[in-house]
Length: 486
Image (cartoon, rainbow, N blue to C red; front, top):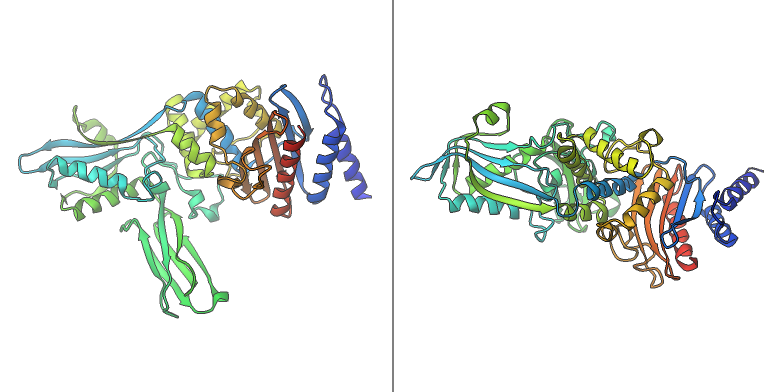
């Protein structure tokens, strides 16, 4: 009886025509209904919206106005808002300055200040993975000025953003994970430290760990040992909240491949200036001061003309590409605060979310109709509808930055979260879509280029499923059916 009721409910919802719009052929709704019945378990909550961008008409509406946890599909709203209000050419500009005089004997009588702009790209990502490329360039620029001694401090100017590093809607037991990396006005290496496990034939001995970058900013407590038994291969990494004390425990199989893990750091702006001070000293430059965050006294005592030493520039286009293609939460949260800083005058999450709300208002949705707590989708409190997402996608399809937005999404069978999904020749490269997953939520939304020359905006949101594998299979099969038949 329960299955019969579910069948009837699905049939009614998927076959009712939208008011004022001619219904699409019945077989489309029938097939989608069959796919849902094939994969979704009884407690799953599913919503689907599909719009033909060629005719600007709905194709499928199934629970499309219901609210769902959207996971990383939240990044669609974040990046679309950034393109709407800041554009692809917006630049992050991080500068290194000397606040003081340089004497004839190469002494800087004052501080080195690294002024942050909220740039998420200060890493090795665009430098063949070399994490130290950017700070090494800064170090060389200081040497080129003949500086050999610094009497003052190495100061992190992170004032572009607030210092609320962590969103209170994020899972408290996962804050050490790379995907919970904190935001900051001055960031480095996605505000994470890399820990590399090196295989060796040293049974019952402590595992050899490489820390990248090698810095005193973190303290590693290594209790992980080697094992010759593959079945015993299991280890854990944990950072104590509010500290940079990192605990490594468990066993590492001697025949395992080298493994790199990422752990978020606490107080990320200090992370960069600590590392840079160490690089200065290792490079033969004496630093008599300490490392610290900028304060009000610094702002009052700034010299009128600080000496510009170096600058590093990146663009919003680069940032959006990584946000969507790599589903990098850290990038999304940096973009949110960037919106707050440049559109609302204060770089905090609340102001950034207000800019997203203004964009949603442009799309026709009042703030009472949805809920947004962060820019990445990590929070389970984010709630959007499939219809809201396809409305956003439809808007961006004709946007002046629409091509860049579409290109930033993972491509079926090629890259990102879709590199192994819908990879057969028939569908490879036909679907550009943002994936999303947190516990209890799977999402797939984007564009489908169909065999008949249409482009579809679609959103498939599934909550409360028992099998993530089945949820993804249902999403993929629906996309493939739409690509073949519309």
